[in-house]
Each structure stands twice: as structure tokens, then as C-alpha cells.
Amino acid sequence: MNDEHKSEGQGESGSASEGHGLAISALVLGIVGVVSSCVPIVGLPTGIVGLILGVSAKKRGEGGMATASIVLGIIAIGLAIISMIVGGYEVVQDETTVNTTQLLLW
Image 1 (cartoon, rainbow, N blue to C red):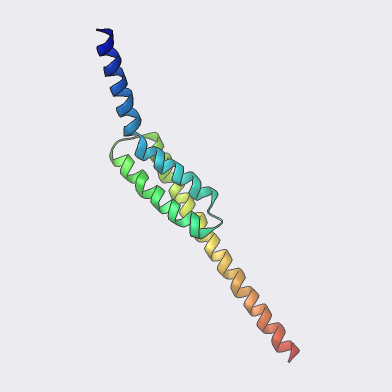
Image 2 (cartoon, rainbow, N blue to C red):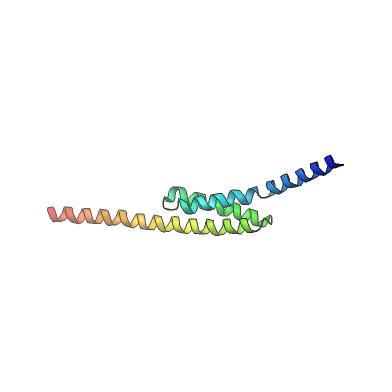
């Protein structure tokens, strides 16, 4: 009788951890996306995938981790886009400065 309860308890805990796997993956990708958002080529894809997995986990009813991963995914995407804009502006500014300097030297 004790063996039956152990196997049932193990099955339930195994299914509970398997049920939150999607939310955990989304949360990890959201965190990685936020941390690496200063490098948009890493931060943007991980933020997008984290957001998609978070929405899927939320539809499955996985709760708080899914909501946190959705928020982190949105933040990661926003920071990566801001980083791309700032980086693009810096490149344009450097090219403009070089062109102006070259014109002054001629």
C-alpha cells in the first residue's frame, strides 16, 4: 500500500514539473533576452522566442512564471530595438563626422 502511494506521488510531481517546463523555458529566455539586449542580434531573438513561449504557457494556464516571461520578453524586445536605434544613430553620426572632416581637409 505504501508503494502505491509513492508511485502516485512521484507521478504527480513528475507531471507538475513537466507542466511548467514551457513557462520555465520562457522565463529563462526572457531573462537572457533582457540581459543580452545591448547586443540586439542576441537579445531580440531570445526576447521574441521568450514572448511566444510565455504566451503559449499562459494559454495552458501556467500562471505567474508565464506572465513574468511575457513581461520580460516585451522588455527585452524593447531594449533590443532601442539598442539598434542608438547603435544605428552612432554609426550614422560617425560617418557624417568623417565625411565632414574629409571635406574640411580637401
